[in-house]
Image 1 (cartoon, rainbow, N blue to C red):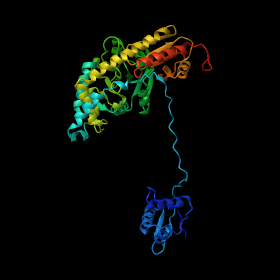
Image 2: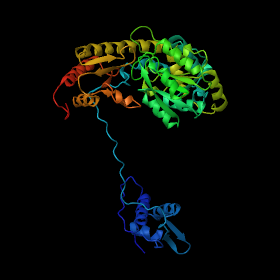
Image 3: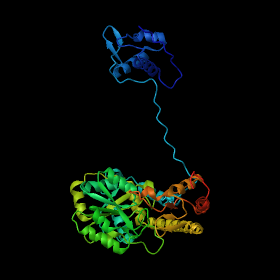
Image 4: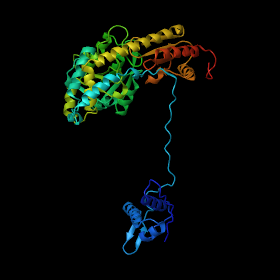
Length: 472
């Protein structure tokens, strides 16, 4: 019988019984204590370790409950059968350290949002007002489509600002665009082929593939998705960004919109998914009304979000379903609970109704317009080596180069100078064989001074004729 000598630490935060338990368990797991080997009695082990008998009894009780030892009447405690149990390694496997993504001094992310302009004071005031009183109903499960008051505020805003024709009953609220797309797939069913603009908003494209849809890329021309190519694709759903095509920045003209609507009207199961992701930001003329507002045959599914205009972490998105699809949702999918808290919905509802959202948009439009103008002015000296497009809306520009450098070389040269830019090829579903090198420059999360500094750096490295990366 092993006396089980162990070094107990009386001043440790770990109780003595846990130290005894851990010591014996480790010896059993490592095989130092064998099956059927007898353990000291609680009385003898307590004397040997100079601890109370109750301390040893607690340790033994824990080992008994976990199956490491067994008690035999009038004989004592023995090591239980553990050979067939999971083999415990002595060494603890350390998890791999997360890969650190390089941070750049200047990052022209096309998905940037200026969080410094977030309306903290207004948001704080509304939150305080809403939570001031004990309102237990705010913490009960709410309407699966979203709270009616919030949906009514969205409906009023969409009609006024985007020309969308809908009632609150056609709106479903969800936590982010990915959730909205998953819910939409439940409504539509799986038997569809979805056409995506190429280049595309890749997140939606990846989501469609993950949801087991057949997807097909459709080429663009200067007016957006080509309807003739859409017809040839055999798709019955077209996913488009007509107000500001992502990433090309094309604003779809009225003629092309009518073509798309005629295409959809030809088939009973045909639909258009209109992603109106950043329609609020337009710098030339008035905002273009949503495609949904022209839809006379209930063929447009309208998607919107507050993540781009307020903050990504808000996670408040929504969709407007044509009435026939809303009937399907009510019949088959109403059991799905809302993924947005009632508190957040009420804050955003008040944010809309009390004019804070409109004031916030006016503020950010002015900020982005100023940065947009600074960026265009900074790029003017490079007009001999590049062409600018997509400058009339959104928060990014496209630069198409004719200076002999490839897209890869442009990205590498910028990165070497601690400036991150983004290649158009990352947004293509099909890689074009002969495509002019094009990069995207987003300006929402850079200050005007940072834009000026970064553009000066870009001009130096894009004009440099030396071999910076092993190529010329």
